[in-house]
Each structure stands twice: as structure tokens, then as C-alpha cells.
Length: 217
Image 1: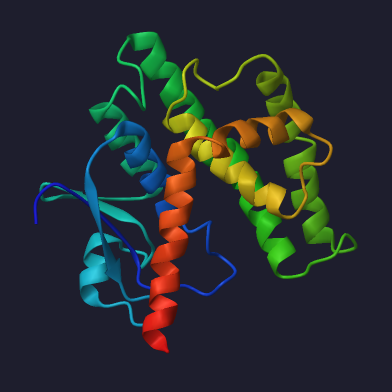
Image 2: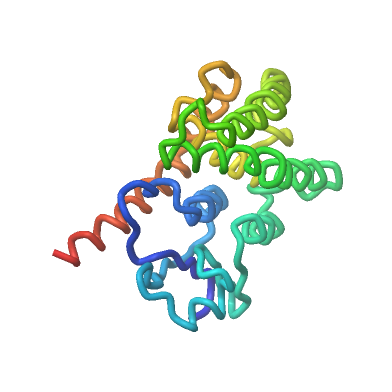
């Protein structure tokens, strides 16, 4: 098959739905207006073909005319290089977009994901490990991001792949009401998730897994 093919799990449990990483790629493809198809790989029985595309058995991966790319950040960068709707083509705009893309992946999500995993697992505020993650996220990261977001609508000027990653990382924190003290981050998420491309990406992901539920009955 040629063209852009996005591969995600055929099914996942209820809890991660709406947050499976293929949503980032769906969102970018919708923003760019690039035609694509979606294929599935088994969630429960991950086969050698899966690991050939994604060595850790995760999703998503994207195939672009035979070129297979895994990791959401790498896929977004690839798509950003294809479409100026996702990343400007001037040197400053490209640099800013890449800078904030990696800031979202490495500076913010590195703090937000372990915090969210603690919340998923029911770790309380009396847990010293949770306290460390809470401080890492809410003292070392979010206050500084809050100042940036107070001064701009989007991270790199126009909306870019950097905003897809950052907004998605913050969405997970917001799911557990972790942004109560950070109104600029909340407003940023609201702007990002109000975009028609995100709304379609979310609806499509939810419909994909709902169809799998129906097939299992």
C-alpha cells in the first residue's frame, strides 16, 4: 500500500482511550489536510511484524510510501517537514517549532507522564515517590511554562507540531485536575482542543475502539 498509512492498536481498554498516541498523528494529518488510511495491529497478541515496525511493541507508526517511522515525535517531525501547516519553512520558524517540540517531549512530558501514572495507579500525596514527581511537574516545569503561555497563543508563533505534543501532554495532567493552579495552561489546552482537527482526531480514535468493542460482542 502506498501513501500515508497510520497504524494503531485494534483495541485498547477504556481508560487510555482518547489518549493513545496515534491521536497526535491523526491530529497532525487532519491539520495538514493530508490524506491517510488507518490500519490496526493486535493489542493482545503483538506479533513479529509489529516489532519490525515498532521495536518496543507500542503504537503508533506511520508508513509513508514504504518508509516506516515510529515514535510520535519522529512522525510529527516528518509530517512537519512535509507541510507548512505544521511547521514553518523559514529558518527561525523551523528552529522554534523543533525546539518546542522537544521541550514538550523531554522537559514537560518527562515530568507529566510519571505524575499521571502515579495518579492512574492511585498513589496518594503521602507517597514520597509521588511527592517527587509532583514537585518535578508543578515546581520545576509548569510555573515556567505558564509564563511562556501567558505571552503567546501558540509556542512557535503559528500553530505547529510543537503545540500538538505540548497540548496532548498537558491534557493528561488536566484529566486528573492537575492544572488548577495554572490557568494559562488550561486556556492553552482549551484553544488547542477546540480546533476542528483535534475534534475529528479524537472522534475518529474513539470510534475506532468502539467498533472493536462491537466486533467482540
